[in-house]
Image 1 (cartoon, rainbow, N blue to C red):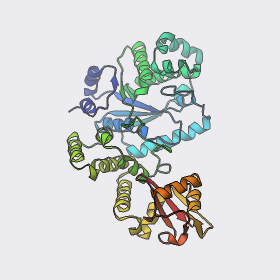
Image 2 (image 1 turned 45 degrees about the vertical axis):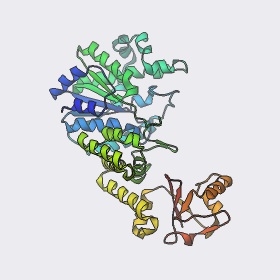
Image 3 (image 1 turned 45 degrees about the horizontal axis):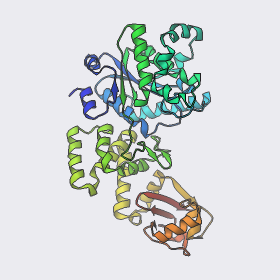
Image 4 (image 1 turned 90 degrees about the vertical axis):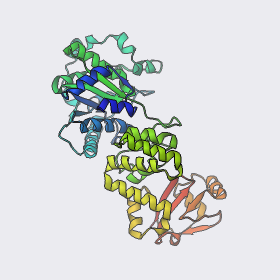
Length: 415
């Protein structure tokens, strides 16, 4: 099975400009491909995972892959998929972000020889405005630009000229890489289709060559929520923002309706292995083998097998044996991997005040309600309104695991 056929069977290809032509071009193993990441935050998030995994598939098939860090385009702001104009970030902030994101991707891919990093600020900063408008701008009619979904979706709300020009800069990036790196394929999320096809058209006009575009599906869960989103926000790829354990738990809790699709998208398991997991899911859904596999494979890809094994061990210990059965060194290790709420300078608290101070509940009425519903456990023990809790009730006189419902966990260190 060739790579494009595998991508099709994994349902990873959403749109393509000329799939048959691309298949012939890729068979020569001569062209390179690229994907761009604008550094608009200090870390990528789980929504970036599908492009990263897809790029890794190309790397594993001996293709030259270019990671474009958009140090220049991040100064402009991409309107694609946005309901309002992005806030323009300061230059220094973008500079810091692009260094962090480049390091993050290098750590995930572990630096193969056929992986190249470029920063489009290096060539966009050299643009002469008049020359650019004469040589590049004349190839884009306003009607052509207005036909793009990323523009049409924003016209009623408002679109600045700055954002309107973004697609031309991205097209210019593609042209630059085609000329300098023989890069004739760009991949990206489905919201990038308009920007990608602009580049394909520009290369045809300027180089008399055919370039290709592939987009990947917007990944959502069965409830319509974006993959990688929680009530608190994004699931980040930086373990300082989202620990490997938190990532593992998020994936472990993926709905049965979504897990097989995500195994195809995000793992390097064979389709036959995934088929066997699907069979197990139908026969023994309570074992959650598919979810455990998804969690382990993704955490391994992002953070390495050692972190994945640690996250799996903590998860299995917590949910099979309970926190009371963890050794002190295991608890200390667990608390290093998790966001921890700290309590200082108190020996004893009313249970209501404890829940408020730890921000597990936002009001006393909410605290009374969940205590009455008996939907809260503190170190596997239930409490009632009016009771007190002390530091001594903690495991080793300081550690507390609070379970709220089936999926919400809080870790408290009482110092």
